[in-house]
Image 1: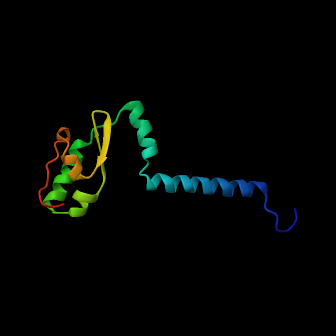
Image 2: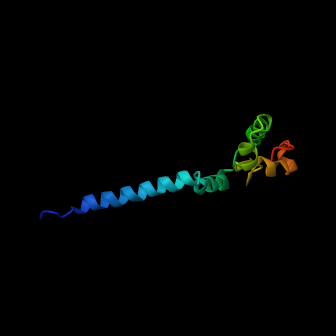
Length: 104
Protein backbone atom coordinates (compact mmCIF):
# COMPACT_ATOMS: atom_id res chain seq x y z
CA UNK A 1 0.00 0.00 0.00
CA UNK A 2 1.26 3.43 -0.91
CA UNK A 3 1.64 6.17 1.62
CA UNK A 4 -1.53 8.31 1.93
CA UNK A 5 -3.95 5.62 0.75
CA UNK A 6 -6.89 4.73 2.98
CA UNK A 7 -7.83 1.10 3.38
CA UNK A 8 -11.30 0.15 2.16
CA UNK A 9 -12.34 -1.16 5.57
CA UNK A 10 -11.50 2.14 7.24
CA UNK A 11 -13.47 4.08 4.63
CA UNK A 12 -16.51 1.82 5.06
CA UNK A 13 -16.31 2.17 8.85
CA UNK A 14 -16.23 5.97 8.57
CA UNK A 15 -19.26 5.99 6.24
CA UNK A 16 -21.24 3.67 8.53
CA UNK A 17 -20.29 5.79 11.54
CA UNK A 18 -21.53 8.97 9.83
CA UNK A 19 -24.81 7.27 8.84
CA UNK A 20 -25.43 5.99 12.38
CA UNK A 21 -24.63 9.38 13.87
CA UNK A 22 -27.01 11.06 11.40
CA UNK A 23 -29.80 8.62 12.32
CA UNK A 24 -29.29 9.24 16.04
CA UNK A 25 -29.33 13.03 15.59
CA UNK A 26 -32.49 12.82 13.45
CA UNK A 27 -34.17 10.49 15.95
CA UNK A 28 -33.42 12.75 18.89
CA UNK A 29 -34.58 15.87 17.06
CA UNK A 30 -37.92 14.27 16.10
CA UNK A 31 -38.34 12.59 19.50
CA UNK A 32 -38.26 9.20 17.72
CA UNK A 33 -41.71 9.80 16.16
CA UNK A 34 -40.73 7.71 13.16
CA UNK A 35 -40.69 4.64 15.41
CA UNK A 36 -43.62 5.62 17.67
CA UNK A 37 -46.05 5.68 14.72
CA UNK A 38 -45.04 2.17 13.69
CA UNK A 39 -45.29 0.82 17.23
CA UNK A 40 -48.64 2.47 17.90
CA UNK A 41 -49.99 1.27 14.59
CA UNK A 42 -49.06 -2.36 15.26
CA UNK A 43 -49.69 -2.91 18.96
CA UNK A 44 -51.66 0.14 20.05
CA UNK A 45 -50.59 3.07 22.17
CA UNK A 46 -50.99 3.15 25.91
CA UNK A 47 -53.20 5.99 27.08
CA UNK A 48 -51.22 8.79 28.67
CA UNK A 49 -54.10 11.17 29.27
CA UNK A 50 -53.65 11.15 33.03
CA UNK A 51 -50.00 12.19 32.86
CA UNK A 52 -50.80 14.96 30.36
CA UNK A 53 -53.71 16.13 32.53
CA UNK A 54 -51.39 16.30 35.55
CA UNK A 55 -48.65 18.12 33.64
CA UNK A 56 -51.11 20.70 32.29
CA UNK A 57 -52.72 21.20 35.70
CA UNK A 58 -49.30 21.69 37.30
CA UNK A 59 -48.30 24.19 34.59
CA UNK A 60 -51.54 26.08 35.24
CA UNK A 61 -51.05 26.14 39.00
CA UNK A 62 -47.48 27.38 38.55
CA UNK A 63 -48.69 29.92 35.95
CA UNK A 64 -45.99 28.56 33.66
CA UNK A 65 -46.84 30.13 30.31
CA UNK A 66 -44.18 28.21 28.39
CA UNK A 67 -45.30 24.79 29.68
CA UNK A 68 -49.03 25.49 29.29
CA UNK A 69 -49.23 27.68 26.20
CA UNK A 70 -46.21 26.80 24.09
CA UNK A 71 -44.95 23.27 24.80
CA UNK A 72 -46.31 20.78 22.27
CA UNK A 73 -47.47 17.56 23.91
CA UNK A 74 -48.59 14.29 22.37
CA UNK A 75 -51.63 12.77 24.03
CA UNK A 76 -52.51 9.14 23.35
CA UNK A 77 -56.16 8.24 23.79
CA UNK A 78 -58.10 5.19 22.55
CA UNK A 79 -55.24 4.09 20.24
CA UNK A 80 -55.04 7.51 18.59
CA UNK A 81 -52.67 10.33 19.27
CA UNK A 82 -53.01 14.08 18.98
CA UNK A 83 -50.44 16.83 19.35
CA UNK A 84 -51.03 20.25 20.82
CA UNK A 85 -50.38 22.61 23.69
CA UNK A 86 -52.28 22.26 26.95
CA UNK A 87 -54.37 25.22 25.84
CA UNK A 88 -55.41 23.51 22.58
CA UNK A 89 -55.86 20.08 24.17
CA UNK A 90 -58.12 21.59 26.85
CA UNK A 91 -60.55 22.55 24.09
CA UNK A 92 -61.05 18.83 23.32
CA UNK A 93 -63.62 17.63 25.86
CA UNK A 94 -62.69 13.93 25.59
CA UNK A 95 -59.25 14.60 27.12
CA UNK A 96 -60.73 16.24 30.25
CA UNK A 97 -57.90 18.76 30.58
CA UNK A 98 -58.92 21.77 32.64
CA UNK A 99 -58.58 25.12 30.92
CA UNK A 100 -56.42 27.74 32.56
CA UNK A 101 -57.98 31.18 32.15
CA UNK A 102 -55.75 34.20 31.71
CA UNK A 103 -52.40 32.45 31.35
CA UNK A 104 -52.01 32.48 27.54
